[in-house]
Amino acid sequence: MANLQRNSSVVLAAAAAVFSFTNSAYAGTPCCAGEPHGTPKALTGLGQPTPPSADVSESAAWSAYELERDGIQYLQVDDPSGKVRVIIGNIGETFWSLPAGSAADRVSLPQSRLSIPVTAKRMEVYRRPGVVLAAYEVDGGIIWSIEAPDGTR
Image 1 (cartoon, one colour):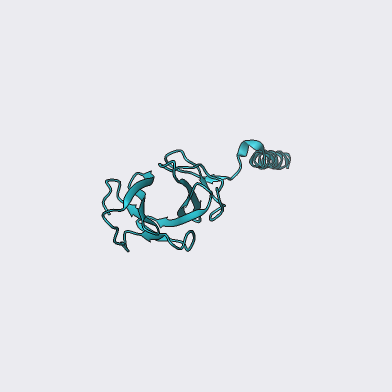
Image 2 (cartoon, rainbow, N blue to C red; image 1 turned 135 degrees about the vertical axis):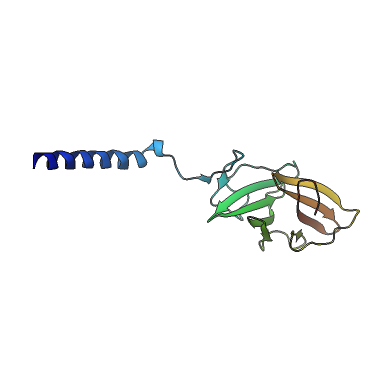
C-alpha cells in the first residue's frame, strides 16, 4: 500500500510539473505557423491592412504577407497605402484567388492563365522556392500572375 501511495504521489507531481510548464512563459505562445525559410506566417489577420506577419515582398512598391490557417497557405499583397490588392490561396500545386482587393485587378493562375500584353511592365512581388508572384502593370490595373521561378507562366 505504501508503494502505491508513493507511486501515486510521483505521478501527480510529474503531471503537475508538466501542466505548469505548458502554461508558463517558456511554453511559448501560439502565434505563427512554421516556415522553412524562417519567416513566421500569421494565423489571423487575413484581409486586414498590414496583418501581423513580416512583410516578405521583393518589391518596395508592395507589401506581401504570408498567412496560414488549417493547412492552407495565403499570400496577401497590399499597396503602399495599406489597401488589400490581392489574396492568393494555395495548397500544394493548386492556387486560387479570394474575392478581395481592387475590382480592376485580375489574377492569372496556373490552371487559368490570362493573356498579358507584351507591353505590360513586370514586377516581381514575391519569391519562394518553386513559385513567384509577379505584378504586371496594364491599363486600368494590375494583372497578378503566379509563375515558375524562371518567369515561365
